[in-house]
Structure formats: structure tokens, C-alpha cells
Amino acid sequence: MAVQDIAYVELYTRDKVSTVDYFESAMGFTRVADRVTPDRSSVLLRQGGVQLVVSSGRGMWRFLDEHGDGIADIALVCDDVVATRDAAVEAGAEPVGSDERWPVVSGFGEVCHTLLSPAAAAGLPAGFRWHGAPAGSGTAGGSGTAAGSGTAGAGGVVRALDHIAVCLEGGALDRYADFYRDAFGLERFSSEYVAVGGQAMDSVVVSSGSGRVVFTLVAPDPAREPGQLDAFLARNGGPGVQHLAFLVDDIVPAVRDFRERGVEFLATPGTYYEMLGDRFPEMGQEIAELREAQVLADRDEWGYLLQLFSRSPYERNTLFFELIQRRGSRGFGSSNIRALYEAVERDRLAAQ
Image 1 (cartoon, helix red, strand yellow):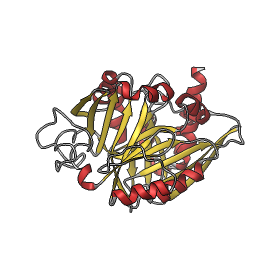
Image 2: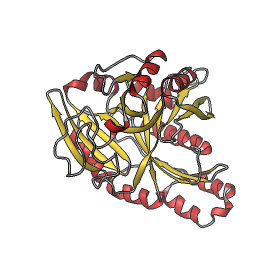
Image 3: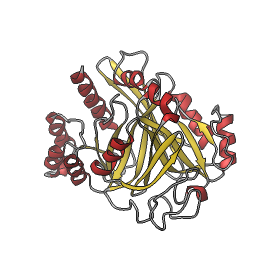
Image 4: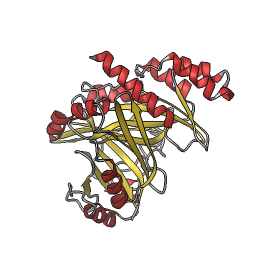
């Protein structure tokens, strides 16, 4: 058994209209289809290879009361759904859904995983009865176009979901890294420990063999002072998705476009770019463009990585987003993890 891909990510929200509008008007997603049931209303959004399901309704009130707007389901495409479900349960997951065609199992916190075969993941997300889909988009569980390969939502600057950052409780990192290995075949790719003042965070990246399912697991060091990850866990009512990272081809114009559309990004101090010039003198005049856009840069043995993080658009200041451009890099911005931590910390302290 092995997980191959992410079919879609489902976000629960109290205000579906404004959330959908943010993704459409500010981030360039396309509305593909709608679904209405007695206890929920959902909209399917698509851009490049990314599918987002935005849902609201009484069926998720308890989740929203406890966690606020956030990711509730990360649907995984498996080569063998039954074997993957059994492995997940054996590794400690709880069965959540009873439909054998697309079983649901628990993940971290109250975030679950719908398990789909490649056939069920093709076209519109299986298990949903969609309406208003453009011709050729497929039907629920049918044989329409694969996610991101049809005409609807194929435009825009976002190419794919590069990774999902997950915030866990202190001391839980190894347990969850082992769980995702045993349940879904995700292997450890890298790890990083960042200390800033009296605070510290630990991180482990786990990835599928295909490279299309990547979770960055982060957790505060319980032996150090409480910091931003502890604040996230308090606001979120426990573990949850901290941010979604969207892969783009050219980040500087993408950031400019998103800013003009209304996306707010975390500020980067000017001293960062002074040090960047010393670290990467070969980038020359490009550093001026990065400074103007406030984009972060890093390098590993494979190449360069450019990235920038948004502020959370949600009331409880939990879920936020990242734009990331890879120029050969396979890593996750080791030096920029510190820069992100410091930027979020400045933003947190300024809001107090």
C-alpha cells in the first residue's frame, strides 16, 4: 500500500461566501462546482493541480466552535484503498466514515483523511454530488478529467500543492512521523530544530515516494518558553494545518499580483536582504527585486528556493498560505524556517 497524491483539501468555514471570494478574487482560483445537502453547502475550487473544497453548514458547527475556520480533510489517493485503511487503523487511526468505496480515517487533531482510489479521485471529488460543473469535468466518482488537468481552473499562477504544514503538540513529532510512515508510507525527508531567543521549534518533513504528498510537521519544544506554535495550538484548539504551500513558476510577479488582489503577506526586515547579499552574491541585482517583493531566498545542494508567507485571513488567525518557487531545490528553506518563525513572532507581538 502507498499514498500517491492529494485529491483535494477541504476547508470548513463559517462564512463560505467571503472565503470563496478570497480564493477566487485574491488568489485566482476558479469555481468549478457546487454541492448542497441538508447539513452542509460546499464549493469546489481549482487552480493548476490544486483542488479546494470550501464547506459550511450545521454539520461542522462543533469543528468550527473548537477550531475556527480551517482544514478538516486532506483526501489521499491510494494505490490500494482497503490495504491503506487497514494499515492506518493498525497504526492507530480511528475509522471515521462507513462508506467502503472511500473510507475516512483520523489523522492529527480533528483533521481526517478520505482515502480514494485513482479512479475515484479522477474528475470531481468522489462522495459528493456536484452541480454546475463545466462540460467535461466529470461526475462524482466518475471518469472525468483528473484534478487540475481539465480546462476549469487550469489557468492562474498556482501549479500545485507543494506541501502542507501541520502544527502538533510539543513532544508529539516523532509519534506522528512514525504514524504517517506506518499508515501511509510517508518517509522522513529532513528535520530541523530552530531556536529563537528562549523559544524553539522542531520540524520533520515526511514525503510520499511520488513526492506529491509532503507534510511539514512542526511542534514547539516543551522544554523552552511558550511561543507562536503554542499560541497557534491555543487558538486552533489543538493540532491542525498551519499553512498550505502553493507552488508557482515565478514568485515575484505572483506576489505582486496577489498583493494587488488583496492578499496580505508577512513583512521581512531590510536586514534580511543585507545578509542575503552576503550569502548569495551570485544573485546580484535580483536581490533588489526580492527585497521589493519581500520574498525570502534559500539554497540547498540541488538549487534555490524562493518563498513568502501570507497573514491568516481568518478571525482566529490560524490557517495561512505560502507561495513557493523552486529552482532545483528539493528542501524547505532551512534558513527561512528561522526567518518565518521570526516574522510570525513579530506579527504576533505587534497584535498584542
